[in-house]
Each structure stands twice: as structure tokens, then as C-alpha cells.
Image 1 (cartoon, rainbow, N blue to C red):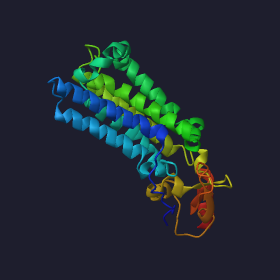
Image 2 (image 1 turned 45 degrees about the vertical axis):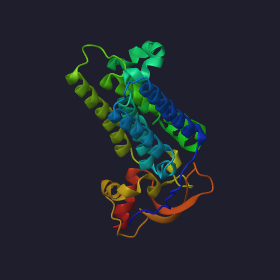
Image 3 (image 1 turned 30 degrees about the horizontal axis):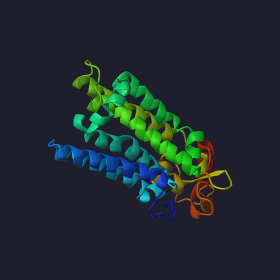
Image 4 (image 1 turned 120 degrees about the vertical axis):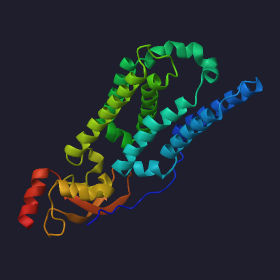
Length: 280
């Protein structure tokens, strides 16, 4: 028994998020053209990496990933990975000293951000803060807060990668071995957050509750991993009973007026298991 939720594959054109991305691409292209006119060649691989970063940003902000991120927890998390990890990595890798020279006077003041002892805590605090229920729900419900969330993830991701790529000079002691350890810590921090979601129960956020506030719309939470959820809760989905209810009206509170019929389960793990035993 799989959860069903209408898939929103619309493309999103939000000027608040698209315009900065386009401006960034235009500024980079102008700088590359200026350097070429002066006889300074920018490696093709750097241009390709920067273009890849811009493409990743557009996938996260314009493609159906954005629309799905407002309905499905999994795609919202995918957005965070694209905006706060992959895009900053590709964009920073596309930069070089000559490209950044006009901004070096300003960037020199930000050199402290390339210290891993500064970058890592700032990134981690941002990551966990935006996944607190209050901020997460606000981001899903309000476009302006959602745009701010995306900006914060992008900036934090950029800061996180600074010591590794040394776009700004990192401390002398931060060599290859230290960088590998740094990346391992970053992934460990992300893994801890993922485990919090997995073991905390569902829903973690109010926007994924059904209208009666007593059930979680599994289709909205994670349709792809519905079977894993059922196995974790030790439910027998083939047996009739109150542990699974289909056809409950679900309205994502972030999308007023859009309803879907989806499989739902009662809130509370103990109640789930007790209902399942009664059904058997």
C-alpha cells in the first residue's frame, strides 16, 4: 500500500530568488571577458565549474524541485543540499585570484571566515537553526522567509567550503589531512541531523499534519520511503484496522486550497503499535 500525493511539477519563477543568481552569472561573465581582453586567460575548467554552480542554483530555485520542496519533505531536503553544499562548492571552485581581484580589498576583511574553527561552527549553527520546527514551518509557509532560508544556506555553505578550497587563505596548519578530517566532521554533523528526523517520529513539522491534527500524511512526509516507515513501526499494512486510514483529506498548510487524498497514520508510535496489535 503506497502513499499517493499529486505531484506538482510546475516551474517556479520567483524574482526574489532568481535575480541574484542571474546577476551573479552576469558579473562572472563580464569579469572573465575583461580578463581575456587584457590577455589573462581563465581556465576553461573553472568557467565550467562556475557554470555548473549556476545551473545547480537554477535547478533548486526554478525547476520542479522547488515546487515539490513545498509539498514533500524529501525534496525540501534536496533543495538544502543543492543550495547549501553542491552549488557553493562548484561556484567557489570556479573562482581564482584574478577573477576576485576587484573585490580583494573587501574580501580581505572576511579572511577570518576561512579559518575552519570559525567556518564549521557557523555552518552547523545555521544548518540546525533552520531545521527547528518554528523556522522550518515559517519557511514553508512564507515565501520571503523561504528566500531568506535559501540565502542563509547558500552563504553558510560558501563559508563551510572556504577553508577546503582556500578561496581565501586558510591557516597554514590546515593541510590535506586536516581538510579530510574537516569534511568528515561536516558529513557527521549532517548524519546526526538526518538521524534526528528518522528516529524522532512523524511528523517532525506541523505543515505535514492532516487537517484533523491527529494524523500525519505519509505521502507528504516521504512517499518514496513509506515502506521503511511501516517496517520501522512494525505495522501490518495488509491487515484491516485503524492503524492505516486512506482517503483522509490532506491540505498542505503552505499551499492554501490544494488538497490531496493520501495514506495517513495516527500520531504517536505507541498508539500505532497498539492499534496494529488490535487489528491482528
